[in-house]
Figure 1 (tube, rainbow, N blue to C red):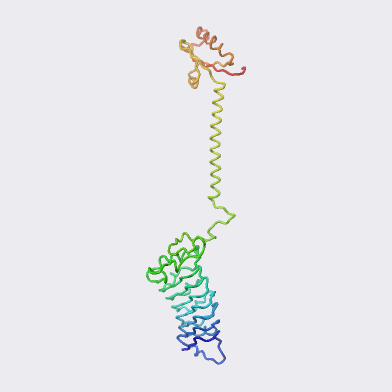
Figure 2 (cartoon, rainbow, N blue to C red):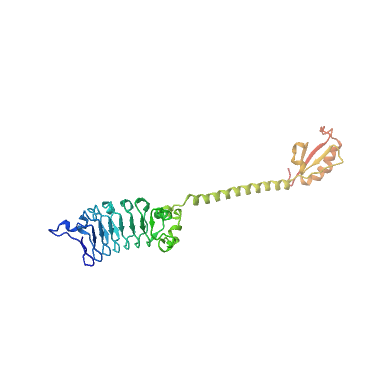
Length: 329
């Protein structure tokens, strides 16, 4: 066992003549130093527990743990880690506990690289989004509290997980005695500011990529004006036709039909108005100038009444319409 607490160690460089057995240990607490690079620690194949809490690490490269096949517990809390290279944890498949709390990471996308992880601590980082922790089938405890969640479409899987994490997994901060508002809440966008994750619906979470570009209008926005224009055209046509029919009727009235009915006459009936609508019932029609209307009614019609046989009209009664116009025919 090698204990190196509270020193000024900045890195681990393998010196000439040093035996690898010196670093062959089951645990190695190195708390309170200033470690910036892991160096040869990645060559310790028998290492099972590595404690690098409260150091000055800023990033983890892909080869950091390439030789630590038997590593079970890794504690790197309270460092300054911002970035972790893809596949960094793929070389420590037996890892059961990982503590990266109180760092400066804004993302963590390594759930699929930790098949045997049982405890994962990522609280107090700057994480804005993660995937579905449920893919870690051996997971028993996870803490992702006090991060800077960006509640958009990329957070749907995590929101669904937080709503129903299952009976086996303990989500720290999501208990009956602790308000999730103090531990898991949105920091952006503005519309979801301080909104608790457990009350969000996944369909509420959208991204800008889900919205149409500014220069591309949705189909509804295009069809709505077209529909309105079509309706207006139909209304205008209906109004125009109705107006035209009204003008025709008015014109008929203007040049109209002045009817005269002689009820005492058994042979000649001069009709107009309603009777004139059914022209099939009329025997004849007289068209004259308005100035001649009186002569037609007073002289011509009585003549037909007195001599119907001479006019060759052999009906018992004659139905005649009298039409007048204001200009000469």
